[in-house]
Image (cartoon, rainbow, N blue to C red; front, side, top):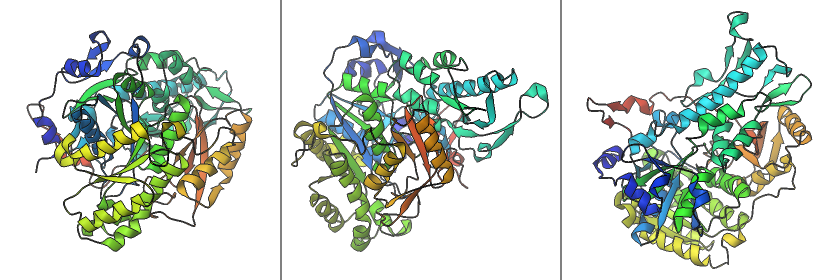
Length: 562
């Protein structure tokens, strides 16, 4: 059996100019990076009149070691829609080097449903993440330099909130002491690194609508507090102009293609467990300008990525999905039902029924909390039995939601035609209960306090009994409300493996509470982050990281990338 990278390397990609032509992108907006990838000038958004296409959001159940295939389904669905004659574009996030070398290996789809060139996309691509890291660390350098040069703003070094970043899983950098070695080397203080995708710069990058908006958002970043408890911003440090200069080219969406030649915008990459988990607004809007159907995804399970797509990205932009796809596998549902990974190939209806509540809660959240039409996509494995598939279908139909089998990993677009049919139906007509983009609603209102917004997500989406705020978090919430940040939406930082903040609680747990240990404002991004449980913003490598298998030969050919 061919690996993902072998399938991708065997493909004969279209020249990127032909892909651009498919998407209706004129040559004057195209900045080519070789033959297979390009950036598209954001001025396209101003210059081209259009009727926005239908927006399809792909999300999933809580991830398991068994795998779900959310990106694979997203790409395969786009190819299926193209095969049906629909003018389609896919909009995805860029992979972070941390997971690429850490756990997952590649992150550009799988099998015969991939975006290419997959090696480039998974590694440095067009340098966007490097630009984001440079902008982040420029601000950190200017902050420490201000303190070194006399600290005119009166910044309390014990209350600096801005961290440096690196796009790698490196636990050694979580907590450091810097500025040692005498007066010439800076003011000694405790510091630390986040992974680049957790940086507020990444969130701002993905939520900015223009260079001007980008610069304004960068200026609002809170880097710390003064001795008299006032926030200090990037604007106070005169940093936003230089930061925007580093980001101006990165802000242009990247254009690539699927294995079947469907245009794909791959741009931005915040994690959904510690950030808002969606690709850039610029890329999404550009895709909607270029196509009649746009397929995009949000990271991890629907309790994270989809919640943030709907409650943050849609709130800030006015976007409304026309249909939502929830991806699951029978294997993953049996894992949620208590079956170990090495026993998932055996039929087990009892375990499947025990794990199904995880899927059903995600579906109910989409249909009842957000009031959107939904279809369940089952990524079919050869070991799935007819009885197992029927059980999933019957349980979903009880909620008024159809199930479509997806075989895009093995068959590409051809294997996603059934799913595409149902998606088109929902986009054009809504569901039988009258749900459509027009009925969309948020899980909480703007008029609630920050505490109430956090409680609304916990109770409505996670089904928690309530929220416990540790003393530090409660104090910070009160301060942020007082400083005028109370009108912002909230971004929950939570484990991806469970509806709860305890990753061991699989399925659809009940009788639990969420613990918020800290909160921080991302004033430039426009939301307040609530850190729950033991979630970390700098991952570490495992005992056998994916990097062990990645190599390059004498010709420059990459191997081992999933």
